[in-house]
Length: 313
Image (tube, rainbow, N blue to C red; front, side, top):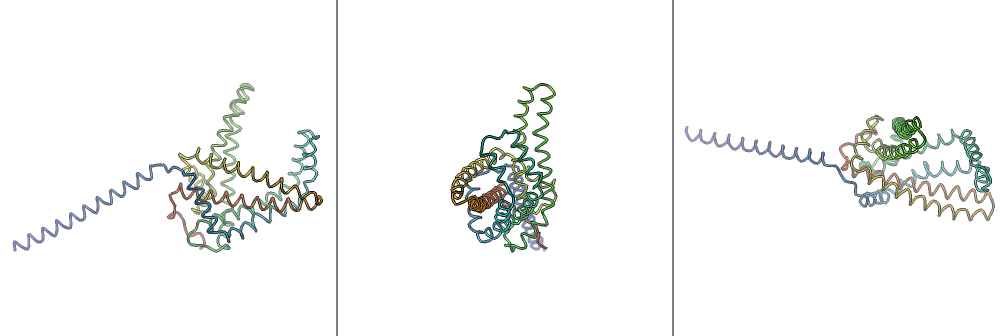
């Protein structure tokens, strides 16, 4: 009987020790997860670029399809179909007054704004769909991804409108307050407004990946998520985007110089070559920028594989 009591006591001690070790290990792992969550992830620009290149290389076939349909064709068709000869001639002559050129541009956009709006909506579907294709490990079909892009279009538009409203308010409010005092203060606060607007733009730069990759359909939640992801990395992200924009501008300038040579063969030939070449450049730049955003989002979210929901049911 005594030996049975001793054995039972040993068994109870082993069980309690194992339970305590399990609880301690769980508590330690929980503390580790909390500490990792509290530590801000620092954006590695080199790693982000390498991951963007890897994404494009691994998905070049679907990228060619989506970019061709949603970025290349709308850009090429709109450039060829919408006459801009008068504006280009006026701007190139150097004889027109700036006010007259602005009036000419205002009239042009007042006449064709609906075309640009349709093109923007069409390309937004392609952008969201392409982000989903680049990052979803379940490998959805092009049709499924673009179907999700269409489904996410309204939340995307709402988020962009909210972000634009905040950006414009951040820019104009300091100027209005400064103008109520005097011109010098208005100029000074105008600089502050520009900085605030750029800051807000950077904070909301990951809204598209949040909607496309994390399947966040609430516009306000998408804005909050982008703001949270960029915390502690706003300056790095701004420098990265600014560097990309500078490279894009230089490449576009060089490409336009090459395309302009085609005008030697005639005005219509020059227009066609410029439209096709410009559409190719535009498509390539959009794809690169989306891949960079996807890579930045992956890095700052820590992979966020658990955040990907079933969006194609």
